Image (cartoon, rainbow, N blue to C red; front, side, top):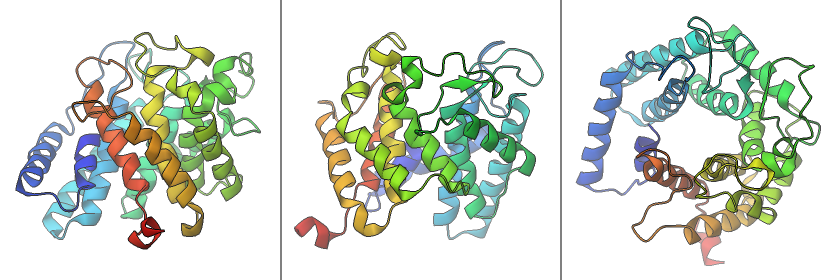
Length: 306
């Protein structure tokens, strides 16, 4: 799903790119409705629902075919049904979960955030998710937001704050999560997420970038400083790009330049990007995130000439 959206960023692509997009879309649509959990304690299918909703919503916006838009809208609703099925009893989602009915695991702030961003995009094209599901996810995410807009990794209930000051839950450990949490809550009308909050955390993403970069490519989850995992890197950069898109046009350039500089310098010799050796898809997802980040770093030609 992410790779399809990344290919959409190339508006001048040739026939081969268009053919790849169509093949990939058929692949995704054929499997919509058949996605399963990986095991009794694993729920990575939540990610599939999330990024298919996000990508199908963008395709819906671009399509001139009413039949295609109807097909995409139906697929989005099926993925929303999957999210309802696997929403935690605590209000959001996690990629881990016990229980064969509704998961009893706590929700995870950055999973909630990614899903809420996708659902906001679907709402924009007129495909709305179940209101109760969305409200519970928003409240669970707000609960994990600390006053400085760092986000707890995970929580069950408001009193579950025993590790609130662990390094992973401080600004250094939350650097990749806070971008997603901020933009998600902003899209759903949270007045606490002002332009100043977005700019403060974009500034942190740039000036304290080393917290994420030191964890990039390390093979063991959370082995780096502040318990940062390698897979925080391009995730955080992508949602940083979405935060930039929420700012006024005349306040974006500084962040666009710095974010693009960090992405471009980390491209691999084979043209890909990757931050964590995850099965066989670390390069596809890393490259998709990087390209989508760069899309939000594009500036008008008049600005580039300056």
